[in-house]
Amino acid sequence: MKTVREVESLREVVAGWKAAGAGVGVVPTMGALHAGHTSLIDAARARADRVIATIFVNPKQFNNPEDLDKYPRDEAGDADLLSAAGADLLFAPPPEAVYPEGFATAVSVADLTADLEGTFRPGHFDGVATVVTKLLLMTGADAAYFGEKDWQQLQIVRRLVRDLNIPVEIVGCPILREADGLAMSSRNLRLSMEERAIAPALHRAMEAAAKAIRSGGQVPAALQSAREAVLAAGFRAIEYLELRDAERLTPLDRPERPARLLAAAWLGGVRLIDNVAVSP
Image 1 (cartoon, one colour):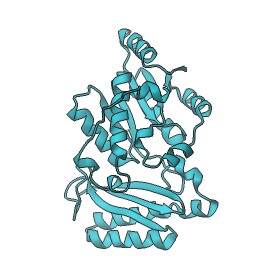
Image 2 (cartoon, rainbow, N blue to C red):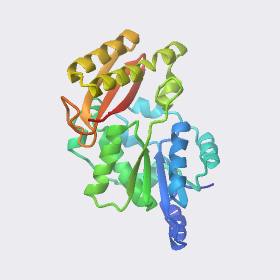
Image 3 (cartoon, one colour):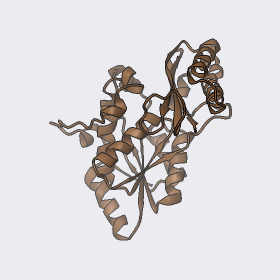
Image 4 (spheres, one colour):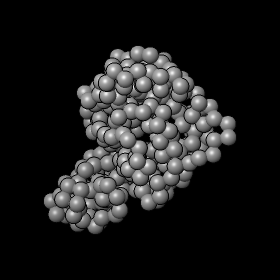
């Protein structure tokens, strides 16, 4: 696997691949990789001739500068993982290659960012939308692969690609979970042993709520039971646990169309998110 850091070098490699007729997939990441990320590489390899992985810790999507400073960075270890997974190219640009001096443009997807994560992380999705737009245009990939754990983010990326006519397919890939159901995340490494034992309670409560809703139960009652179960398990706070339209993210009182249960909750000092599909 080759590593490049400048946009010109990236485009030169991709142009050569495309001239040879190769289809190109990209997996954007911020590093701190785990098996969930390598599953995206696997998905890209199954469909593309060449696979690019990107590592860029995007400063524009952090609300708190301290969180940016604390974000785990291990490019060498991540590169070994990506190479073993079969990535052909790693694009790991420095900040100035993405946001050169005088950079003054932002991409904002209005309606999909209004609440949920948008409420608790103001400005976050503008940073995400801006960097994803840049990475898609920089790489010129035919398809981009994103995990479904960040469901709201996935819908935002799909919308911006549609609205801006960017010629790339956005592929959502299933959440990869630990054996006890906890969604894989680099944040899990920050959990204490006691917190790690509690963490799967979020997914269990959401699955129970989804089952109740699918069986015809009242949505408010199912959501309230889930919230109570999460707090009783030891989570200190729930930011949201709601049923939303799967694509438009509008609130639903009943699953009349494809829907998702979406949740964010604090366990100690770690914020965990998860989502579960609910079909009508």
